[in-house]
Image (cartoon, rainbow, N blue to C red; front, side, top):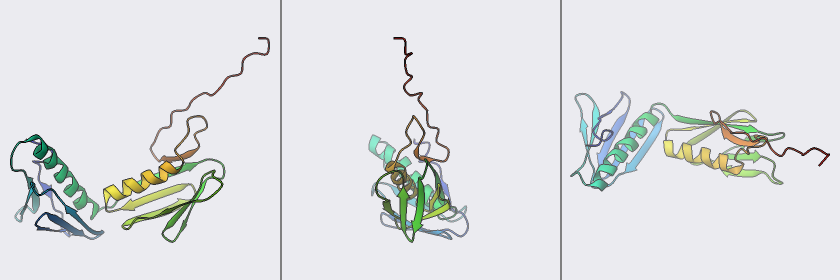
Length: 184
């Protein structure tokens, strides 16, 4: 049996979970999310300890995979509506900076033009400084995807370390070319 799939999902106070057919809706203090899961997976809500369980019809390989996946997706929804997920990115380079204009993030990262990125719905972007971008929201996938889109504009390069990187990312540096002696 799936170790992840068989674990119950605790539902904290202030969070409402409703199941209708193949749609699971989770509503909490920070937002509302919904998931259209695979029809083979069953979802049961236990009221006494206030938890949710995901069940599968049999032990076929596909159902075992979907069991753990469905449980993880629903658990991330429950966690996200209570405490939003966040990613922090740093911008390194002379003159490199970010400017937030309404729901558009403008990046000036060494190109001849400003790169404009539209914020997806449900994702909030904060600039604590022109070189530090904080992306947060209750949908883990949307937050991670938007942070990856920002990083993809100018990934960090290994020689000078310039570019956009995650806050905790280590960029392996290379030495560069060493000039030979003039006597050769």
